[in-house]
Amino acid sequence: MGLLIVAIGMSLGGTTGYAINPARDLGPRIAHFILPIPGKGSSNWGYAWIPVVGPILGGALGAVIYKALFVGSLTSSFWIVVAVSLVFLLAAYAMSKKQAY
Image 1 (cartoon, helix red, strand yellow):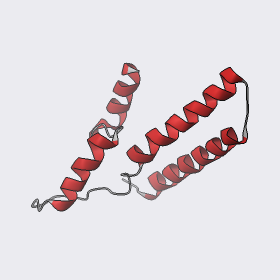
Image 2 (cartoon, rainbow, N blue to C red; image 1 turned 45 degrees about the horizontal axis):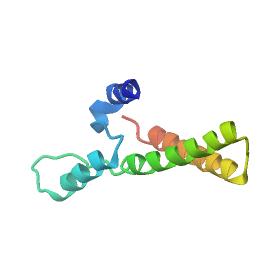
Image 3 (tube, helix red, strand yellow; image 1 turned 120 degrees about the vertical axis):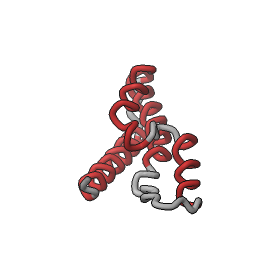
Image 4 (tube, rainbow, N blue to C red; image 1 turned 90 degrees about the horizontal axis):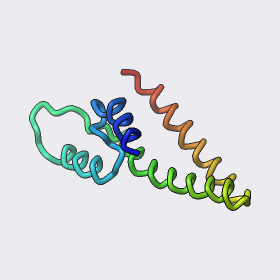
């Protein structure tokens, strides 16, 4: 788990400031948006939904995968969560291609 957090931080830490937890990302983003700082850049609200939706979607996906693999039941909730996950991944990919850096 520690190596996963380090890998995420090393790959995205410079641009997002370890934004893998909404408690570490959303508060500073709101403060940056509200405070009158001279010469500040954008608050990058296009990315703000990822630290909020990602953990919720990851937890749901992990639960249904666990249930499918270890309990042995492939219910409709499994396919619904997989479909929603794919939609969000495709949306994030499309947004990343739309914002050319």
